[in-house]
Length: 356
Image (tube, rainbow, N blue to C red; front, side, top):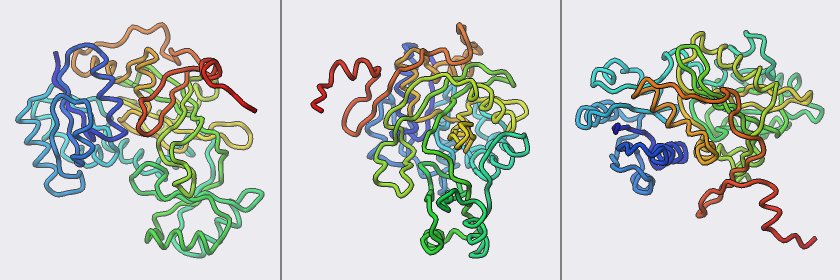
């Protein structure tokens, strides 16, 4: 039995990881750390610690206090910002005796800043949309003139750390774009990019000392609460579908190696298709699982358990294949106030009566 700390407990990022570890059946003690007690209390961890937010100066002392008190075998950071902040004092964390599987800080810093990732992808010869940092109104005018599609539309987004489509807005209107940037005090922090299609796909992978352990592809068939976001992107997948795609199998590992010469840990490659049907990497979610990781677990691929077995037991999985071990066409449905559902399109059609 191992003692495992998961940060961000109670959030969408972490609940699936905690649930997956419990579903692993190893009787591990799961300790959840979170900064929102109303979320923390709802997670399934066996013990729950209310922590200061990672941006607060008290965070470091609080984290080290918990590590020295609990003496866990493993810690897993399930949030970009918290990971980036915590690894600034990585040696002090590891001095407590806890183990983790994470890449070097340079890789993390590259991946949590989308523009840095884009530069790495482009330098590696990977197909990506053109990007331009918007420092002022002239940059914005130039981006609209040179990066717009047939309707003149570009994709604006923030470069700073954060998920859920932070700062994202598709627009072809200069005044709207200017007001959007100014609302966020975002001159110099926003990027304009060529607009990709709404068709998105992801590749979640675990690597160990430069070697792929496992990678699984998933299509995104819709965002939850998309009407609440100007861009339609919320960061929370409503319908996920397992799939295999030869271009993704080629491009996603290349994207990983573009940001990390010796990949080590979790790399979640987000991609969107361009008008030519090429999946373009848009970001890498570094050292954390996607919010839909429980989907894979319930389908038969428990990636949090695989991670734990590597970190705690130095044990690599025995899989029939490292590439997309799950069958295509499995669906994961999610709604607020309803348990998620693993199903297929055929099962949906069998249960739902269509009246038109």
